[in-house]
Length: 172
Ligand SMILES: NC(=O)c1ccc[n+]([C@@H]2O[C@H](COP(=O)([O-])OP(=O)(O)OC[C@H]3O[C@@H](n4cnc5c(N)ncnc54)[C@H](OP(=O)(O)O)[C@@H]3O)[C@@H](O)[C@H]2O)c1
Image 1 (cartoon, rainbow, N blue to C red):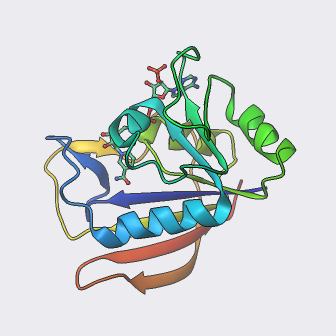
Image 2 (cartoon, rainbow, N blue to C red; image 1 turned 180 degrees about the horizontal axis):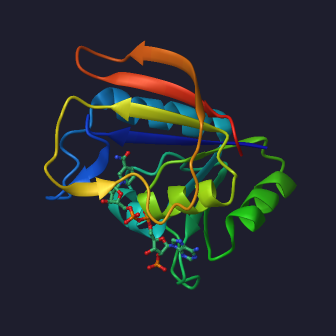
């Protein structure tokens, strides 16, 4: 199965600002994340990201699988697609495959993306680069222990200021 990352960054590569308020994200980022989630019907995120977007902004509402990494597996899901798990990235991939999924998208945050990258399980990355610079904030990667080589597949201008870079990971 193919796993993609879909993530918005500032022009200097940070995925959230020090205020931790997502008012810098364009509507095009939101639409792209929703469209990809609807297409794949399989979404992966960490519990911190889930706590920010659930229940109103979850991209899958009634069908598909929303995998949320958390050590608190007894938490109550906000809708029927949500599965809380503390399984490894390899096990999560196997679980999605056993449900018949052929593609999945990771929508954040840094901790979750980094674990899938370390496990060699990220096939493609979409960076949505918003026209802002942050003095501090959250870098995309955390404790990543390897270097990735990327193959640029497509550059798209999403609006006057927002660019999308679509990469394939060459060395999983
Ligand atoms: N720019 C963007 O596109 C974008 C998108 C999404 C999020 N963000 C930002 O990213 C930030 C959140 O990222 P983050 O890295 O702090 O958190 P995260 O990856 O969203 O979630 C981390 C949490 O997931 C759970 N978790 C992670 N790995 C686990 C494992 N192996 N086993 C069990 N549970 C595991 C833990 O939850 P428990 O504590 O419950 O165990 C952990 O605290 C926010 O500031 C958000 O605004 C930005």
